[in-house]
Image (tube, one colour):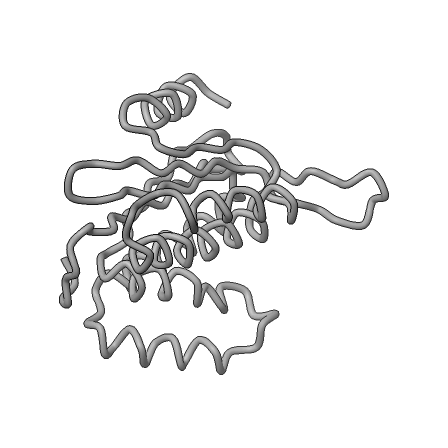
Length: 186
């Protein structure tokens, strides 16, 4: 990893980090991390559930689309490698998910975020229905999870691409979840 990416990750993991994880996104790790997210972040069960749902979507994105894979001992699973950070502020939680990605995949994800952020709530629901109709093997298909993140958070998703080498970018998604019960996208 280059120095710029290392510095950014160090900064992300600094102040206000409530929960952070860096490593392989396998079933056991996800279950333990999810349990903590679901039950201990706030006194508000509805808010915890919202954070949990977004965590699952972003973690699945890392597990599936990371270009860095960790192979299990029995060679049966290839788990994506990445980072996940939750920061708590006075009025919100901010969730970050990052992983190394092939440039082409990172660019597709970035373009999809731009499109998702340009849509109204009703347009997002329609886009989600349209994505479900696409064949799962279609390149750039799917990514329903990113749409679901925006719908669940009731907020736009930020993304950052950091070029690592000619073939890879480090892709970071972040989303804010208000501690207040808002009804419109922020």
